[in-house]
Length: 377
Image (tube, rainbow, N blue to C red):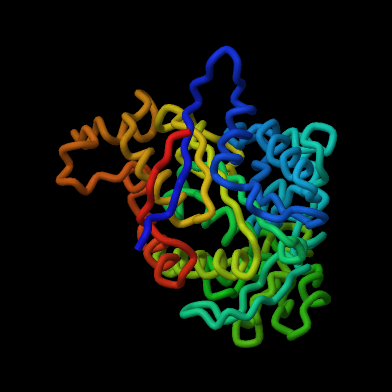
């Protein structure tokens, strides 16, 4: 079986070519022009960064992608779904504010921003897939309405998944609020009674009579709850949250199946930038210093191969001294080479995580392959 092609270019530049031109050349060489963009809607799936975080991709890169799509006759838009947790991207209005503050406005990127799952994270498309763990993926509607999907990923660490790559950007990032709950847990939220004021907003929004207010505090009957996540969106005190109780492996399996649901049956192209590799996700409002030096930009039609190549390149890098990774490697006495061949930068940063089961399952279900040919541009 032939290996998947993954195209790579470093962040080094000559005097005649900027990084933005290098990204354009990378996409061209990787074959993005083989996609028919003429009069097609192209969703550029990106992470806008939580307010306060500065590790997210610069909007300049998004503009290069959007401009290229328009050059090829397409209609691009930047998109992401609302978050499951409480933060600056919990609803579409706050999400848009955060995106614009972080530089992703139409004036700076050349295209509009659409929050894929709507105002409260409930505007979703049900995608039947009959997967091993997911039967129906719940995906942000605008993301599924697009004719073409382009993922533009900031490759970085993640406290739950090990790293945040293309599959996480698409699968977890593309899930509606209910979709994110399904991936993270059994889909049942709970109430923090210290925050609850017994206002009853959760009761009004629920179609299944799951929330009940007693003695001025709400509780949720998990036997009645279907895990739609609407109560999270309407709670004025952020007293309702999902129970993050799935195993890491189960999260990875579901994330891979969601990514497959979003990618199947339409043209997809994937880009990843390994820069400012923070130890945790861009969802964190506080980002620590990068754990490794900047590596480069990659592009492929295969998101599995792309994630594998990114992980391999990162693991071949020496840690930044004084970073979380550098300190942990120093404490363990591991130099990254002589650790019995088992060393992994991302596992060392977050010991309770592992990422390989995600790629293994993604390959198993046909999302892509882990074997790749790295082609330097």
